[in-house]
Image 1 (cartoon, one colour):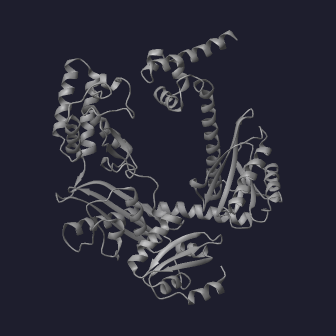
Image 2 (cartoon, one colour):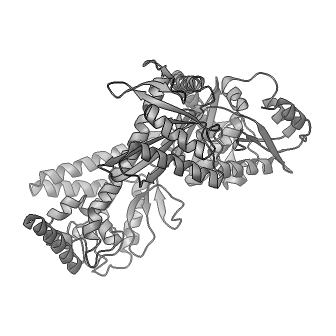
Image 3 (cartoon, one colour):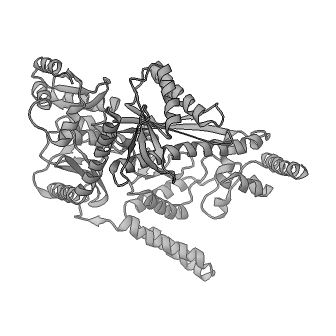
Length: 595
C-alpha cells in the first residue's frame, strides 16, 4: 500500500452520503460499503486499531473509489447493485449459492407437480415451501403425487405411460379430462400445504385398508410411511403462537470477536416452517453485511407479506429495495419473534464460534506458511492435474484456491492433444491457461502448485518464461514420499522444504491435491462415458440428442439399455425408433461375437 497516495486521497473525500469501493493490487474490487458520511467512514479504515478480520481486509487494500449519492437511501441501493455486479470477496461471506427446495405446481393446460429451487424462472407457477432440505420436499411430493394424479411427464407423450396404469396420472395425452378436474386437485394441494391434512390422511387410510385387505402388505407399509411423513413434514412444526394474519419473515444478527451470526425464521400463519442460520467471518460493517445478505436472499426467494427486523439498524430504503414492507417492532408479538431470533443468533454463535474460528485460523496460518516458504504472497494459487487411459481422452483440470478456500467458479477443464506424456500435458495446459489470461487481461494467480518434483517444475517454468510471466507467478512443486503422499515442497531452485504432517499446511495441500485430482478424473469419466454411447446411438435413425438423453435417463446406463427388451424401449420412445435402437445394439453385439 502506498500510504502517501492513500493519505492524499483521503483528504479529498466529501462529507456526503455514498458508496465506497476498496480495491486490491490487481485493481479488483474486494469490498463495497455505504456511508452517511463518506469522509468519516473511509478514513476509519486507515486510522486507529482494528480487529483481526478488518485488519486482514485493510492489508489487501491498495486503492479505493467512491460514488457520491444524494441520499443515504440511494447509497444503499447503489451498494447492493455494486455487490451484485462485482461480488467482492469480503462482501459475499454471507451469500450462499444454494437455494431451498419448493414444491412447484405449474400453470399449464395439464399441470405438473415437481420440486424446484429457482422460483424466479417460472413466475406463473405456484410454489409451496420452502422446505428445510430436499428429503423433506421429496417426501411431501411423493404423498401428493400418490393422491393427486397430475401429469408426470415433462413433455406430452404419444400414449399413456406406466403412471396412468398406476393411477398416478389421468392420461391427458390420450383421454379427455373433465373441465375443472385439475382446479379441484390444485385446491386439494393448497389445503394440504396450508396445514389442512385431514382429507389427505383419510384418503391414505382408506388406501392402506384396501391394500391390507388385498394382502398387498408392501403397498400398505408404504402408505403407512406416507402417513407418518405427513406428521413429520407438515404438522411437526414449532407453534410459537397462533397468529393468522399472514406470513412474515424475521431476521436478526449478532456480531462478536470478528464473526457475525445471522438467524431468520420463516413464519407462516403463526408456525415456523424453516430456520435460516449463517455464521461467517466479519470483515466490514455488520449492518452492511446484514443488508447485503437480505438483498441476496430475496433475489432467490419469494417475498413474505412483511419483513420483521431489529431496532438496532437503520434500514431506510430497504423496503423500497426489496419491494416488501419492513417493520422494526418495539413491543408485542413481533418483538417477541425478534427477541427469539436474536437469542438464537447469540446461542448459535457461542456454540459454533470456537470450532469455526479454529478452522479459519488453521487455514489462514496454512496460507501464511505457504507464503513464507514461497518467499512471496500465495493467497491465490492454481493447481493442475491430468487424467487419461493409454493416451485416450486425455484431459486436464485447473482448480483455484483463494485464501485457502476453493474458488469453484474459476475452475477450468481442458481436452488435451499431447497424448499420454505428463510433461507435455503440463506444458500444454499451462500454456493454454496463461496465454488466454494474457489475451483477455484476466486475473493471474500469485502462484502455481504442480503435482510433481523437478521435471514438472521445469515444464511449467519453461512455459511461463516463454510468456514472460516468470517474475509474475511463483512455481512450487508438491513432492511425494514412497506412499504417494505429499511430504515436501520444492521451489524453482529445486530446494525442498519438509512439511510437518500435523500442520495446517499439510492438510491444506492434501485437500488441494484431492480436489484437483477429483476434478480431472470426473471430467475424464464424463467424456469416456459420452464416447461409449456416441458411436452407436448417434448413428441410429430416429434417435437425436433428446431421445438419447431420455433413453439413458430411463435405463440409467448403456448396459441396461443394451439388455432391455424391445417392448421396454418402446415404452420410452416411439415403436419404430425403439425397433431401430434394439436392432442396432444387437447387430453390434452379433458383429463382436463373429469377430
